[in-house]
Length: 190
Image (cartoon, rainbow, N blue to C red; front, side, top):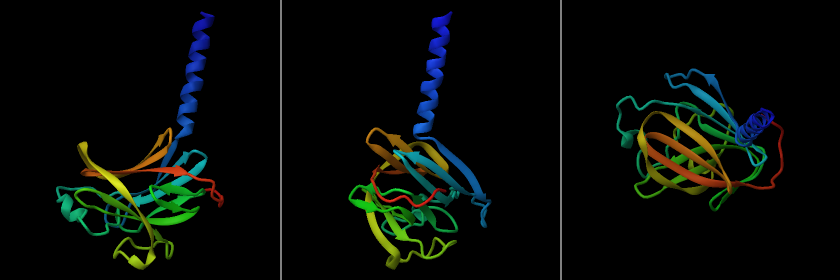
């Protein structure tokens, strides 16, 4: 009986530790001006606090090519610009971003997508039109098809042994990019 209690207690501790290593918390920011809810999701990855705030539009029977036009920067959300905030340096492929707040766009293509990092010009900055003068860098993304269509845009971060993976899914499109956490400076919390 005692051995079983110890095993249950150990399983609870292991489960709790697993949840805290890549725990995420999502809160609704506002319901959205056009019906797309806006959320902020916060993750802790390898000591970095990372938040992504974005509008979550639905496909609603529309063409994926219309919503995510190949060869053109896409705002990766609805309404206001999608923003990433980090308190540590992050490295996405060849692109290093320091601690701070950045806009996120993507440029879909048939063979590879690009994740585009930009300067946040002002709070509440609108997501379109795309302004190339604010771009600070790009990182290549792998593309794949989702197992089943995803009706509402979803941006996730998956913790990995070597860092993490930022993943975007919408319709049948899945784009992802691996990243690592560096030793950059910390700027407050979220």
